[in-house]
Image (cartoon, rainbow, N blue to C red):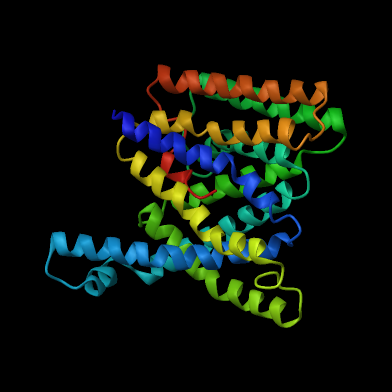
Length: 310
């Protein structure tokens, strides 16, 4: 295991954890408009990166032009259904996350990403017929009791956390069947959403409610920068995952929701009552049991490549 890989992984997850600071700087803009900009600018950033990667790979492996290599890589009958589903799921996840952050639910969004690994496990059992160890079942039961406790304590389900975990967990399940690398796959996903997002942005601009170019230089730069903000941690992660074990990546992933949680409590001063702390503590105990089981049995807490597209 190389130390540089660990630090790149840490940097990626720290950046993902700091995302609330970026999106709350745009809190005056509707969440759907922010996400549309994120899709459009991410796609524009990713396309030259992917084309450059393809060209270098083609030069190393053969004398064939990159277009020929690309044509052989893509089987539209396989790629389109998988990546269309992935695009819809990640688009919904991005929207809910930005909406939650900008509506004072940073703590709730952090809970969603804390429980995502356990949702991944349940989906594996239900959909893929995977088996769990005894400790994994214990972890799932403890986490479920924590969510039920929060439901009882507040009289309502922590819906933002459950929906975020559900959409991202299902996204990871879909990506298990995806044939492309994370970078290439995210490019295809944003490409699928690019035209609808661009049409939406043109429409809101024409009706006078568009923020880009009309809400000040700072807002315009932040909206355009959403593409860079999205791709930078992805590139760091893609580099890290090649250098360190997946079990290490699986543990590093908890950096992001931890930072989000701390931001919600200490920066945004969101209400966090003792009853809420009890519910979170139950979930954290479940994650500790899950992590211990992963090391004891040499299992992977989470398939790392499913955790790349916050």
